[in-house]
Image 1 (cartoon, helix red, strand yellow):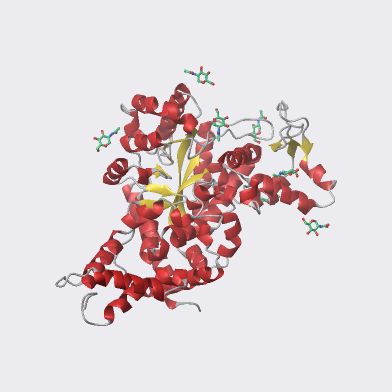
Image 2 (spheres, rainbow, N blue to C red):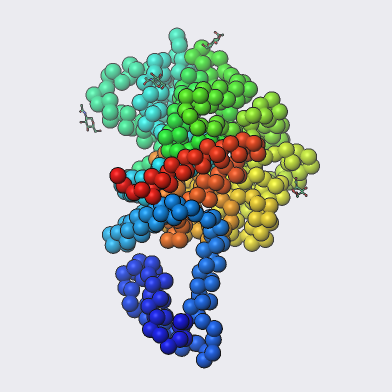
Length: 532
Ligand SMILES: *[C@@H]1O[C@H](CO)[C@@H](O)[C@H](O)[C@H]1NC(C)=O
Ligand SMILES: *[C@@H]1O[C@H](CO)[C@@H](O)[C@H](O)[C@H]1NC(C)=O
Ligand SMILES: *[C@@H]1O[C@H](CO)[C@@H](O)[C@H](O)[C@H]1NC(C)=O
Ligand SMILES: *[C@@H]1O[C@H](CO)[C@@H](O)[C@H](O)[C@H]1NC(C)=O
Ligand SMILES: *[C@@H]1O[C@H](CO)[C@@H](O)[C@H](O)[C@H]1NC(C)=O
Ligand SMILES: *[C@@H]1O[C@H](CO)[C@@H](O)[C@H](O)[C@H]1NC(C)=O
Ligand SMILES: *[C@@H]1O[C@H](CO)[C@@H](O)[C@H](O)[C@H]1NC(C)=O
């Protein structure tokens, strides 16, 4: 029975398929009826079933989506039903109250997300790997305040620019005194003189993240938020790059991801020099070895944890000769530490991450010179919305494209990248907080997810954005970017993708996938069973 048949079935089925749209507007009857009239007036007398055509189209779209090809087990189907029901209920409720979380700024949505049942399921879900996170933003700022700044021998100063700097030193205060610091103050002593220490600790916290109650007012434009973003790294580096803190910071970061059911990370590492109390500064080799050691010890104590790899990450504000040097460094490290150094990432962090018209000029020449030989050994090159970067990434056969925010605007490049099976790393909260998109339902990845373009979800700089692990970004991807159609298939595919598109060896991927699958089955069983 089709739209042009003689039954009364057609308007009804139209209403049903429009159910989501209609319930969004809360005005179900009118739009569907109007549409029914329009459609039937176009029906030729002897058409094939319109229902059939429509169902075919819907089925085709369903198959195209990320995860659309997956066939769920019986138990997964049950889990999916439950998940879908919770998702639909949550969306209905959001439309009723007008608080559509993915459309809100994350800083304002965060506490509401934490109350979401869907979010709490996502937290329990084995998410596989985090493939796009940066070294100085993997660990909660609360930990830095409560742990790092409470260690002995911690000095800080108020800089002339009105920001903070930290440095550990003993027995004497840090030397030489940096130009921007009029005077070093011993933090322990300073706290003793305070009336209200928790007030002060909260002010430190504000120095460590972008979080603010009113982001639209605090950060009027991209320049404003970028200025603050850069300042955070400037403030943090003296804390995080103190050797004992560095080790614990990394370990704590891995703990936060592990608790969030992430078993493997690829960390963009700047290899910023690490120091000791006596002023000793360590080499990059030391750093890589320390990453390896910490991850190894962590894995020993945490069943199922697979490990980390480093993507040596530099910034594009450097001139060509300096970048070439960085690449040589990266390749040298890769030869020395093949188990952990995965590649090189040329991000434009620091010069206008994700936009960087200022850095556009040099990228093309750079690629031309990079191409022969070197590029084959480069595993990663972060593509950015700077269009040429995107081109570079595809021409150089990058393993993945970081963000790939502009890819959907370049159909030829997109087709080429797709043919080469180069996934994008979608970091929803980062893109929103850094003002590339405000309503995450309109993120460009929505189109690509619907079309089945390969992608992974990551969190970029969770601590700077007030997030933690991957779950918040998965929530935004699942509820916002994926729209109503994203379901358990989508989530399963995204998790599988994170292992598939990692830089792990084929053997490691296989065992990682087994570990993940085991956890996935437990998760699915729990979800299918429902609340206890
Ligand atoms: C910070 O964390 C480390 C590692 O968990 C712990 O050993 C240390 O006691 C903590 N320090 C403070 C001041 O909380
Ligand atoms: C310190 O300030 C906080 C607000 O930041 C307040 O809640 C707390 O009661 C104050 N504590 C003392 C001891 O005054
Ligand atoms: C950073 O901390 C200092 C020291 O308490 C404080 O004066 C300043 O207001 C803080 N900065 C921000 C942005 O809150
Ligand atoms: C500095 O401290 C580190 C770590 O405690 C130690 O290994 C190193 O020998 C010290 N260097 C000097 C010159 O004292
Ligand atoms: C690149 O920058 C470095 C440091 O700023 C400088 O010493 C060097 O001369 C520059 N090289 C070129 C080719 O501009
Ligand atoms: C990137 O490079 C510029 C210029 O060399 C520097 O000022 C900036 O601090 C660097 N950013 C990071 C995150 O290292
Ligand atoms: C990229 O891969 C293609 C096909 O495998 C190969 O022909 C091409 O030389 C590669 N390009 C680079 C820059 O490595």
